[in-house]
Image: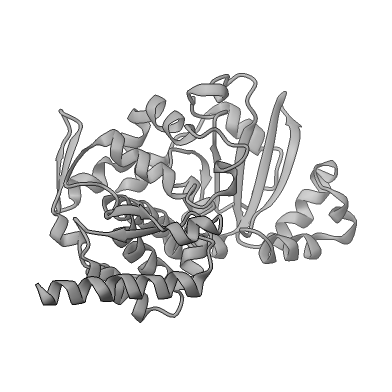
Length: 341
């Protein structure tokens, strides 16, 4: 199983974990302090260690952690664990972070998320925040025997592979695949526009090819639609198997439309919509198609009630009615031209 590749822990991480309450269903470390990155974040010695703690009962966990680590919290600590948990569950991506904590001589930050919210994110990509981090190599420091959580972790990796396939040609390299996977959680991330290194995804993947390979090799080898040439580091995919949105089993309308939109948008030649550009939006229209037909994407937009939310999640924060109208007018006219010919 792909999940086996996630397991990797060290004494240093377990020592840090000993400073916190033990009731954890999952704890993992991630980021440049754990796996070397190229570029400006290449200094691992001084890099902050990032942790995520998954807990079944956030109120009880925060209550215990306040007793042990009162100084870690902001002013919310005076309001008690119930308020902290409410902020955690109802704002942002369902994670409560305590940053800039010195622990065992290392600067760390740690986020706390409920097990139920994590499972939802892994299966449905509600936020693709913690789920996105778990699509990249991480170091699992602790994990209990929660079968549902383990299954969700595995399915999250398989979903990431499927989404990446929709953005790649029939033949591609391992590096191409891992770059697409690592970039999924950065789609629409505001930091990639302002403040973040534009080559961040490449800097994550290139120094860690072996770790990505370990994480995904079993999924690729077991997929009947994939020819995985491990010696050459190349893959070939049966595009027909991924050309129809109905091929996959989806947990939510958002995930279904995510795949449909990826197949329709990223696998087609992108043409700038000059009218939208004049309004400063720069949204891109689509023509032509290799993996997904125009009809597939067109029908997907007609069928789904949640497509506006999906476009927003993907970073296409445009005038949604105009986008929908423009999509229909473009493809209806193309259909008429094809019928006339």
